[in-house]
Amino acid sequence: MAEAFREQLQQPDLDRLSFEERFGMIVERHWSWKENARLKRLLSEARLKLNACLEDIDYRSSRGLDKSVLMRLSSCEWLRQHHNVLITGPTGAGKTFLACALANKACRSGHSSLYLRTPKLFYQLAISRGDGSYGKLLTKLAKTNLLIIDDLGIASIHEQERRDLLEIIEDRHGNASTIITSQLPVESWYEQLGDPTIADAILDRLLHNAHKISMKGESMRKMHSVLT
Image (cartoon, rainbow, N blue to C red):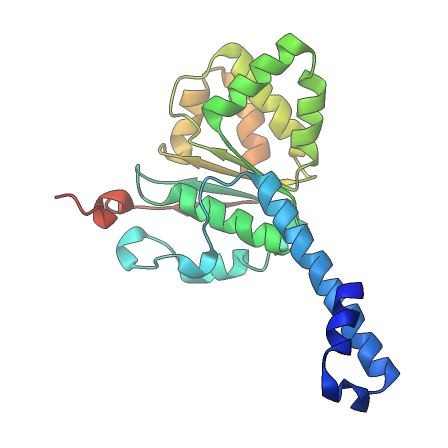
């Protein structure tokens, strides 16, 4: 606010404005500064893999994306209602880009987000059990408005990892939103999770009020590559 006031003093014609108008300009400047600082903090804490925006999404019909669905998701109402988004498709289809774009929009709307690839998530959980910070990490994951779990099912899931995943999904169910991306179709997740009891519990919580997006087409990395 002090900086905005100093700038006002350097503008020769500003004395034509009333005190209320000048004060309003200063307050507006301060509000914009706070909002920009909050957005910068949210994006930094989200640790998104890609600097993606919904406005940059390629809607070519061959990719299987429904623009109307993504327009509805861009309102972030699904976040306020604690819905999930499940994104499936072949490697390179743009699953991670779409997930990061939705998280970017969430941050711009004031929601906290966090991106984690599945192997890194399980690694952090294993480390936290060893150093005594397991409960603290679970609390952090539970309190994040939007959690992205990228590349689920890229490798076999062990018993402890299944239990960890159930704990995370259970804590977030009805309280926060989760985006999960996978190369496997949702119908194959039950078999990939392994244990029928735990798989039932995880999928029941994930699929309830979930928005499913199935992507297809050639790898976007291949299409954008300069290599033949």
